[in-house]
Image (tube, rainbow, N blue to C red; front, top):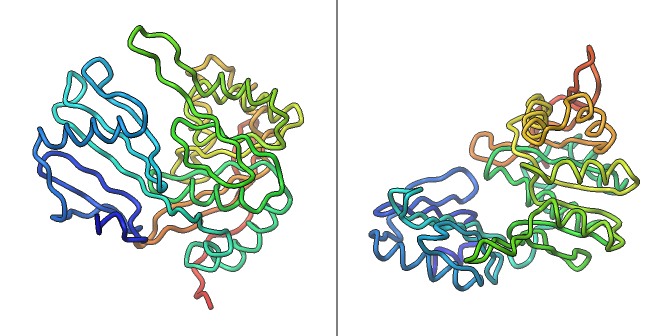
Length: 300
């Protein structure tokens, strides 16, 4: 399809009678491809089947990775949704190099210099931002610069490269058995002689074993949904609370685990680095202290 072949396209979101696309500046309506409910349900089932998983009333939602850097999330019309939904995320077959990202409008000169220093140091990094801001793209570009044995743990494979070994979660089967979770894969990865453990995104039980691993000599990188540097501690505390991890313990583990926090955002229709910081304890509370003031500079 001509639309998918466009190298600037990052996302396609389809619901009955409505398609939205993103070329890097936010979702906008498109008349290029429209589906009614029956055709959209057929498309959803076909795409998920291509990825080796199933979509039916017993399992009405699924994630798969397809050849060509395509990630598909589909929801079938069911008790959980009044209509079928398909969300497609596209990554280039040739991953964007860090030098390509950091000579664009994504970062100003001071940010570029510091991100290169962080990458070359090999220190552990937490990349944060909202959906579609380029967290995974930046993480993958940074990982490509490392001469390390990297174990990447994801629900759907997006972190790829010659130095990356991918582990992927598995949903339960029709009998409700056989599921493999992110936190289980973190524990298994520790036995695989990794130089670095990466989780595509931390959002639940996997946070605890990852923090424990990074506090016992391993290096790591991951992404987290948080809109800015200031919201990172609150987001981590929210996840930790759901896993019955005491806030003080979480704060100590997080501060020791990650040497750097990089925040990305969409500003004026462009993906940008919005902040770079470090964890610190201020008034006995975990905070992220900015290391560079965000400023917009004209890039050569």
